[in-house]
Image (cartoon, rainbow, N blue to C red; front, side, top):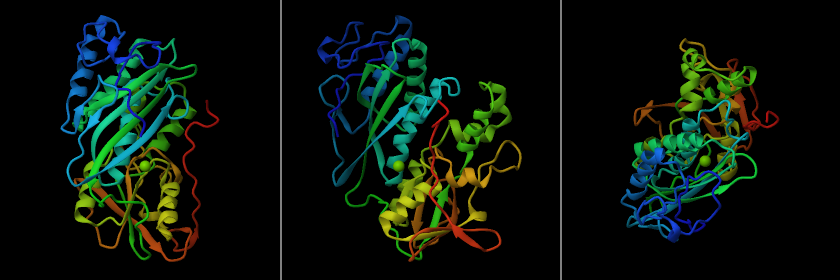
Length: 361
Ligand SMILES: [Mg+2]
């Protein structure tokens, strides 16, 4: 992984790579946090510093050229990086900045969860256009840091720059897993059960509604609480991933970022197996407060659910770490994916994953 610059700046229009030695212009001490924020944002700065200092794995965090991380004895390191890009992953007129920050971190957490790992440190690189209101950055960081705190996850470094285009955030997460125990995509065998956590399709259904409407107000979300929780507050299944790994029941695992059909195909290709999915078994998100469920297409192909998809030779309980787990099919020796309808007839299932806001700029 690239060496973290160890600087977090939240300054509007900041140039890249402020040297750590030049920090402290706001009297922020020797941690090297460069802040050009108005003094009224002092609380937020203090919050970042508090988060930056914590974590048993971080020996030296923000304020040096690199972060120094301590690897737990007998563990492998996990590293994952995910972009969050304006007009690709979010739109400013659709998504509140706090939720963009939360989802940015969730993308990384979910990848660590999919390996059965424990998140240890986060690194954030943020490029923002010069005309972006300061409050947007403040609220983005607030959302991200509040979620980090929930997971006791330290922010150990990062960078900022001015963007010539829209907002771009890149989150790097470092995690750990007992040596040789990471749950890979390549471990599935023919004849195993296929499971998913939670419910699928809520995110995609919410986006479909947003596409049809004008800018969305709070009342909308109250009408569609299922959409709200599905799309805007995805839950990284870190505890579920760890439990499955500890019990040794998951032979292969992936998180659902691009959609069930696309992510299942990744497991099939890496494991050299096929898959048969029962359409009726797929747990679909609620379309609101009532009993209505989202369309099957959303559950099959919609992205941004951040649930876990895994295979197992053993029967898995209906709940793991307090989260619903549903069997949706089985792996097969013959390659390719098939979808079995309520009438028992099978048809080919093609990966039709999420294309974010393509064509909707
Ligand atoms: Mg992933």
